[in-house]
Picture (cartoon, protein in one colour):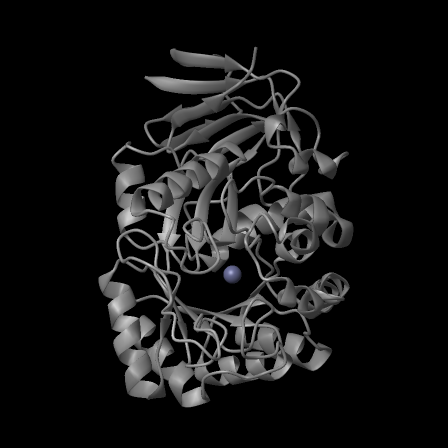
Length: 404
Ligand SMILES: [Zn+2]
């Protein structure tokens, strides 16, 4: 039986002008038709008059399973699972129907979601992110031996490896755990102990080993990279996508565009860090490292836009109770405009995922759609409030419907 969405203003994700009262017909997990038919087919009909319908949002930078900062012995695997599943439900209810998890979740998570046991988005996991010893993903404090936390099959945020052969082995372990793409750390980070954001991490040869292992599986590598030199190393190695890009310069932006590499800025984390670090369990010593990064990231987005780089949407939210994921669109709208922010979080992000079946409302695409209470083109602040997302359809199934 068909599912028919009627009466809403439709924003298709491609940047086209909104269409008033375009009827969307869904059969099974696919969109069958958009507008154009005089008489609606038989089926379940939802009257969405006054609402705006868009493609399900995509978050390319999640850590759904990073529910605490460092190994907390008091946190049981059951509690970790409970907080992870709660994050999944909140993510879906915020209108995000697809995520790329870039450190933490592995193939076990999409399996339980697809089995219908947990409400959550379509998860494309990276498994543990790969980091050099002493790099952004090496969570061992400098003068103690506390091992990095994590359990394969639940949440294992990082894997430390060195040398091209070490990276190759770690990449294969990530793929064995169900990774659909790899995440590597090519620069230092804000939230790490023994490095600086301006550091380069992994040699080009090490990065290339990851790219080769990914290519052998028909997939790609995305790299944590704040600094332009780290991005240029990544480009030399054939890396397709860069996270954060905080200190991007014009020359590197143009090199990215030429290579067809994408950028995933993460405005949400730099915006929220100062407010929520205690809740996330972050050490206070990290705070000065984040100073000035939000302005720098806005500037990077301007440079990337001018160079013609594909810009995806990522939040980098972490911790328990991951709410406010839509904040990324509200912030992004300040520099890309409301429509630009929507395109970034839908069709542009689908392109980065190499998923032509996602991110657009058109016949033949997967039926991932959301309805928003209001006009996000006139008021992008709407995105910051998950309660304004009143309907979520994933794979043709109504997952959330709070309309009264
Ligand atoms: Zn991250």
